[in-house]
Image (cartoon, rainbow, N blue to C red; front, side, top):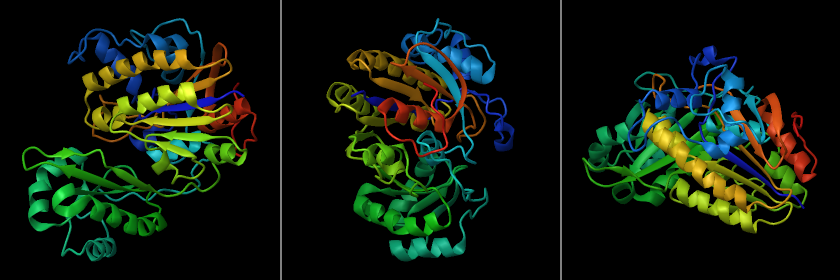
Length: 398
């Protein structure tokens, strides 16, 4: 039986979202702007010249960006040998759960709760619950912040007082940073797990544990991040596959995003390189008829939020090189779809996600354009390929 691989390049948007202005993102284009920066010599740290992604561009990546945004794609002009298009989201968010759930056939039926850009950012009742569950007299932060800078700013005081560092962003998240040794990793994870039901009832999408290590002046976030995400409101592609008796594999933070629903085996690692090793292995070993769902987060976490254009370009070129080896391992009849969940344009203002369309690049499905499709069409197409019933609103583009 044919297998399917759904691969999310976290934050690798391609511009053109028709409602981008409502999110303050009119004109954002993660891939397009990176390609233009590379061609103009503005992304020369650790790499040089135009953006080089021959594998995915050969399947239609450049064509997808041009379709989505109408912008030029210097360096990405190959004639497509795959199926390609771009997808538009309808959920009212530009965050991880919204994008992944909708790609899996389930648009978000509610409005997310976002915390205001004020100090303090959190209601007193929530702060009181954090303190009660943490056993502390207060919290630090209580504001919008980027993860690395707030740890650098408040890490020493956190170690001295024992108070957790609580912060949010433009996404629907409540994040807690704490030192793995002085505060304790298990204590941090329990604190986040205990707070999650309260935050989820408020329609806050995720409670995120952000452990860090080191000493003042040399703090580093550790690999033990854990997301406590609100559960999807309906069965997703993973549930459809599992319900049909198919093996399901989740790579990276897919387990967190879907609260482990519909997931048979979870494969995690400390880096995207580790995760790609899992993907390569599953290309060789995954069961006939199986679904493998992968998320590669470092585009977003290491380069998008930090507005590092060169780093983002390096990551894209590294990923493209690995993609060639992965595709060579697929068998006859296998389908691989490369896509994204939102944008995070490293040339944009601020440090948050950007509302964009996303590329939909298919290997193993013939050649030609699929046009502008819906996020939910990705799930419907994979279900059609696997020969299982689709329960969502999408339509197959295969």
